[in-house]
Amino acid sequence: MASAMSKNLPRRGVLALGLGLSGLSLLGGLPALAANAAEAFVDDNIHKGLDILNNKSLSTEQRRSQFEGFLLSLTDMKRIADFTLGQYRRGLSPADLAAFDAAFQNYATAVYQSYFAKYAGQTLKVTGSQARAADDFIVSTALIDPSDHSGQAPLEVDFRVRTDTGKPIVTDFSVEGIWLALEERDQFTSFLGQNGGNIASLNSHLNDLAKQYRG
Image 1 (tube, rainbow, N blue to C red):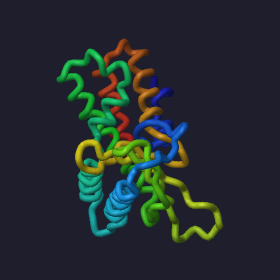
Image 2 (tube, rainbow, N blue to C red):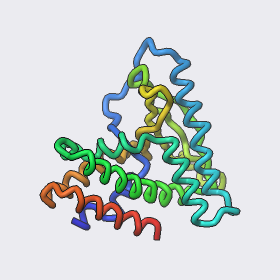
Image 3 (tube, rainbow, N blue to C red):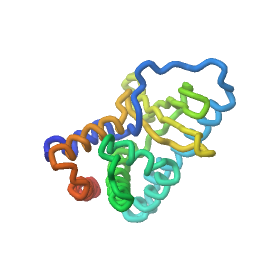
Image 4 (cartoon, rainbow, N blue to C red):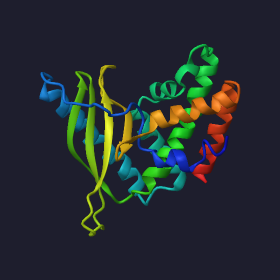
């Protein structure tokens, strides 16, 4: 199973947490103010995470702790975790689901910090947004490297922002159209299928991967 869930595969799509964008269109009649609020939420918050990674005065442990706190304040980690279980979420006891949510959070925060650390020194510029529904937006950004003078287009990073819980929250993000949650769901359900649906085995595997990402 190591080949199906190696470190390289989740790293390929690590900036993506949710549903794909096929058929996405801007829905008419939605207030521009709502879209602007989603854009402002991304613009205001993502820079905070990059600032943490760029802060050379922090120790490795301080940077890790602060980035994890930032990430958990920005995302709905439980919502994402439960989605990645697919059909295996049905029938799980509350205790088993809580154990998986904890293992997923440990894994996800390690992966995201490892990935974002590669872009320390770069900035994100919001370039627009699209509405899936009145409380569901895709905010597009460009990852800009001030030291890159190649003339190539900046990397596109998209964030899915939901407001159905009463406040903006990120439930997904992607790089160049690659969204992580669907990829993770495929990996996790494949792992469970090959291991008799044993959620404890998946939890152990995710914790092992988190250790590898943290080095």
